[in-house]
Image (cartoon, rainbow, N blue to C red; front, side):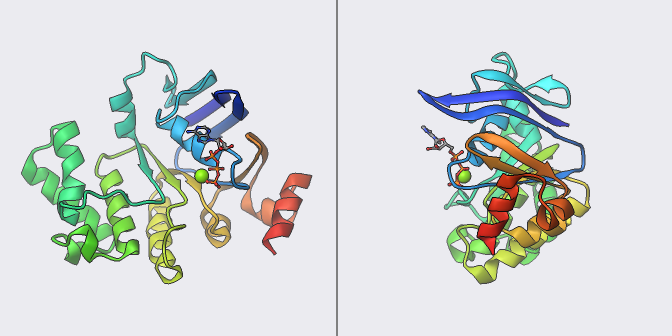
Length: 240
Ligand code: ATP
Ligand code: MG
């Protein structure tokens, strides 16, 4: 469904993605791990055209994303993204944060947008917080609103970039649980995380990046029990 082919990305002279090949199948949860600076966030940002690539191609459902003529707005509707920082609109309620995109970008009428948003807030366990403002919510709750907001656009793929890294430890679980639920419903997901429990339990594939390259791409049981590469072994040994 989402394909990276020989993707190369430079920031000036710095070569940050090197011949990255990655095919994420429909319904698959692909977990990306790797040391700081290895290019994980850049890879996700390229998939959403927040960054341009210099070489190679990225496709969604067979259509080029990286082509300069691609309709970026339409693509972004089909690829939802959630970041480490929640970036909710501070002066809008949880419900308004979720209804805004569909109304403004997709032209959904207010009543429909509201009905969908209520369903989504229920789904992330926040049905009773629809009228709360972000500063009245915990970090975990805000992040769940951010997930509901991304889902409101009805994306084909969801990208998650360390969405629990800024949370207090006791709030991490509730966000991972929502992501686990999404995975079970068959959402195609590309997830950058340090949560190895989640990676192991929910991931269909573990993709290890190092220095801008995919250095291992294995099922979780292989990666965590008996990694195929030295880089994989090295990475695991540092976790223990
Ligand atoms: P982390 O685990 O710390 O989030 P990461 O794997 O997400 O790391 P990236 O943020 O993708 O890594 O960064 C990859 C490389 O690209 C790093 O060397 C970083 O310094 C560089 N880089 C990222 N964004 C920019 C930018 N906007 N301009 C210049 N260099 C950048
Ligand atoms: Mg990052």
